[in-house]
Each structure stands twice: as structure tokens, then as C-alpha cells.
Image 1: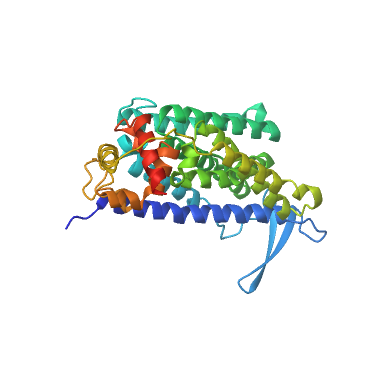
Image 2: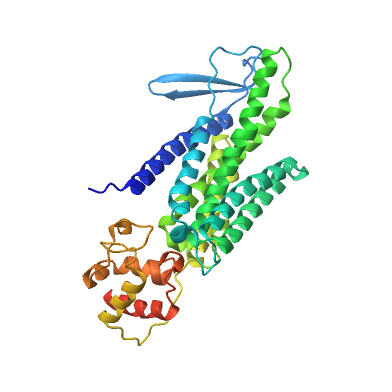
Amino acid sequence: MEILYHEWISLLVRWLHIITGIAWIGSSFFFVFLDLSLRKRPHVPEGVSGESWLVHGGGFYHVNKWMVAPETMPEDLHWFKWESYYTWMSGFALLAVVYYMGANSFLIDRNVLALEPWQAIGLSMICLASGWVIYDLLCRSPIGSHIGWLAVSVFVLVVGASYVFGELFAARAAFLHVGAMIGTMMTGNVFFIIIPNQKKVVAALKAGDQPDPALGLQAKQRSTHNNYLTLPVLLMMISNHYPMTFGAAHNWVVVAGILIVGGVVRDYFNSKNAGLTGGRLRWQWPVAALVTLLLMVFTAPRVISHEGAEVSDARVMEIVATHCQGCHSARPTDEDFTEAPAGAAFDTLEDVKARADKIYTQVVVSDVMPLGNKTAMTEAERAELAAWLKAQR
């Protein structure tokens, strides 16, 4: 009996990442909704900026928000931080298990840049840390006091980083690193800004001092950023299943589109929760739909000329044996796989025919397979395979 330790570790870490991510995103969405649903009414206590009434689970909740802090601290104060911390830690662990341990297959594409695994892993860590540092400096700079300019600057930072990642890593890894960098920025906001500022407010109250209102404003700024970045980072993290995104030429353009669509959709819900009406709620969905349509056109499959080509079954199996069976076989020879990925083994012609559409998408429409093109598959071989696969449809 052979236990698939690596696969089980990957599965359990991925499960933990999903669980903690749901907890973090859920609490983030709830508190942003709560903040936007607050209404200032005459009877609220002094220092309270607004109140909100909610109904859930058969009961009613009455919530007040103090802009700085109440005069006295309650005995039980619930902090929301571990959801963020565990999401980042499990995400980094998953990055290590999949992309660092399988660097030759998933992280490195020697057609992009010939790196050794230790070099690619080091660059990955530097990129994630640098993303946070640059973002934090932008927020603390004079630009940080202007909402519009800061939003544009963060947009340029993320899109620029996606371009750089595409020049360093395999396309799939480059896209994943965009999501990982955004996630690092978001957790950095919680760990370095939001929670420390809240602790300073609590400490000031316990000492009998007046807390600095700027601490709360800074924390709210970073929390708002996290809210608007949530939808894009979610899509980036699942993009590895959709090669038309990361496999597109100039995939940094796709990143830009995802940021716009995610931010616009999030703005709709934030505006609605704030009680805004009319034209303030009419532009988001048309804009999101238009940008999505443009992305669909931009990522349309590339055309590989294969007209008139006659490719035999034997030639197809020769190409598959050279470029695919190292991983996709009942007995993989690639060091990074102990079983065929997704259970797709191409040991026989019938196996290949059964998955013709998938192969066409992964190898012809997008050149993301073979992984990192480790076997140096040529355009001529892709054209031959395209002609044969087209005939199977």
C-alpha cells in the first residue's frame, strides 16, 4: 500500500484555506454592510455615529457604532483577526506545497525565464513582500489622502506586478501570484494597521486618555481597500482552472479587467447597502457587463493554421508520448506526479479521443500544456495535434 502523502497534504491545506477564506470574507462583507447600513438618529447615545437594526435566526439585533470608542470598555470584546491570519498562512502553505515543491512543473517556464527552483522560490517570496511594502508606502504617502489617486495607484501597482510576474514565472503561476500578492496586502492591512490601531484605542481608553481619531480613520481606509479587493482576489485564486485567463497573450490586461469588474460590482453592493438610489446604482452592472464582454473577446482562442494537414493516429500518439505521458499516464515518469493529474491518463488512443476537447483547450487554444513546456513542444507539433483533434469533433 502506497499512501499519497503529498496529495493528501495538498487537499487538507486547500480545504483549510477555503474554510478560513470563507470565514474572513464573510466577516468582512458583513462588517462593511453593517458600517454602510448605519443611520444617524436623534436618540442615539453621544459619540455614536449611527445605529442599525437587523433580524436573523429568529431574533433582532440592535447595533451602535462609536466613531472613536465608548467611554468604558466592555468585559467581552470580540476581535476579528484570526480569520485573516489563518487564510494567509494556509494560502502560503498551499503555495509552498503546490508551486514551491513542484517548482519545475508549476512555477518555472524556461521559455519565459530559465530559473533554478531555489531562484524561482526566492523571487516569489521577494515579490509577495515587495507588493505589501510598495502598497503600504503608497497609502502612507501624500497620495494616500486622495481616494481617487490612491485607487488608481493601487490599480497600476497590481497590473504592473502582473506584468512582472509574467516575465518571471509560468503563466499559471504568474496569475496565482497576483492573487497571492493581493491577499498579502489585505492580511498586511489587518496585521500591521487595523488590529494595532484598534489595540492603541483600547489601551488609551484603559489609561483614561482620549484615543486618536486618526487611528480609526486609517483602519477604516485599509478595511475599505480589503473590501474592494476581495472579489478580484477570489477570481485570481480559482483562475488556475481556466487557461483562457492566465494563458492569454498579455494576460496582465486580463488582470486589469478583473480588477475593474470586481471593483465595480463591489461598489454596487456597497452603494446599495448605504441606501443610495437612482443613477448611483444604474451604471455598475452595464459597465461590468461591457468589460466582461471585452475580456471574452480579448481572450478568444488563438488560431493555429492546420488546414489541409493529415495527421495519422500513430503520429498523434508519438506527440502525446513525447509531451504528455510523462504526467498523464497510469505510471507517470515526471518527478512531480505520482498519479495522472485529474485522473487523465493518455496511454491509449481511446484515452486521447475521450478527452479531445480538453486537450484542444489546454494545448492548442492555450499553450499552458505541457506544464512549463518542459518537453519543448513546438508550434508545428501543436498544429499537427490541432488538425487531428479538430477532425475528432
